[in-house]
Image 1 (cartoon, rainbow, N blue to C red):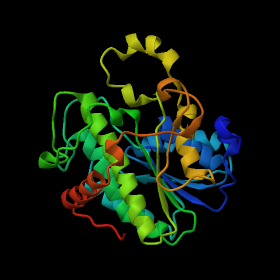
Image 2 (cartoon, rainbow, N blue to C red):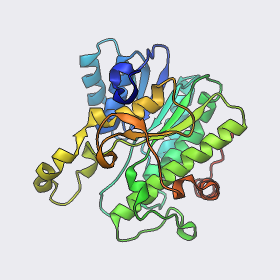
Image 3 (spheres, one colour):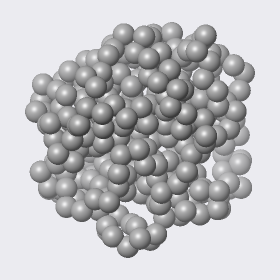
Length: 304
């Protein structure tokens, strides 16, 4: 480890570990899967599109011919798909060392998930909430196992949880909707960590954010082709954006409840370090309420 200049070279040996990464076919998820596989982990690429997942696996194997990779279909915008995907993984693997909740939706046409939730909240938070709950029994017995959920600095901006319309709110602002889902990611992480610690579990929960990474998350943004040259100097590559996730997932010094992000201006780019989060994200009562509301709307209760 090299302190504030932590890089992929600091990832410890992952041989013998099983990592499950959602949204692993592109962007930060792909880079996370690539780095873990390069260090010897067996990586399950949990993806919505199996053809894209297969192409991602081929790209990783081209760089790391001996990489152990598996594909699993899982659409986080469908609780039925989440249940099927989690059941298939649980049947295949007796243990999971790393669960990386990475898949996300940002700027996309206003629509709902197959279960009627607002697309960003339903995918980014509720899908991962259910996914984690269904796979948790494969992590709990494993010493050093971790759940890492990818949030965003957008959790600070116009982010409010409306418990009267929990998961259903369809406001005009896509940025506010995205921020709400990313706030929920942090509230979930903190409440999960509290419950794991109270149960004396071997598993810890952490969060990370990539800063402003060059990924496909803005692919549906209007006029993206015109504005990309203007925003590129503010961004860093997806491989750099994935470092915060990778540090949360593998740094031996990382602890439950910690939040990692870039160390540069406004946390947009840079090396991964411990970062702060909003007061709202650290509110224990809001964490508890979000957890209980998530259980109610997904119909799923955790073991902890």
